[in-house]
Image (cartoon, rainbow, N blue to C red; front, side, top):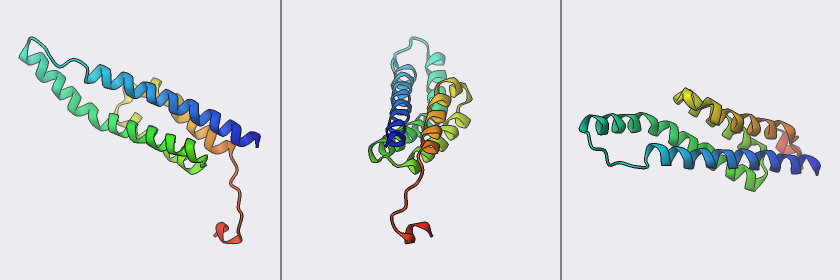
Length: 123
C-alpha cells in the first residue's frame, strides 16, 4: 500500500510541474500578439510555428500523466516519461523544466511492481 501512495505522490508532483510548465509556456509564447514592427511580428509567428510541436507533445505528456495518476497505472507514467523526453528532444532549451517531470514519472513507474491476478495476465 505504501508503494501505491508513493506512486501517486510522485506522479502527482510530475503532473503539477507539467501543468505549470504548460501554462507558463502558453502565456509566454502565445500571450501578446500586438507588436508595432512587422519584422518582429513575423519573427514571433515563426517562433510560434516551431515551438508548437513541442508544446503539443508536452500537453500530450501531461494528459497521459494525469490519466496515469487517476488510474494509478505505471505504464501510463512510463509513457508520459517517454513523451516528456520526446518534448525535450523537440525543444532542448526546455530541458531544465521538463527533465524533473520526466524523472519523477519514471521513478513513479519503477517504484510500483505489477500485480498479476490471473495467469493469463503474465502472457
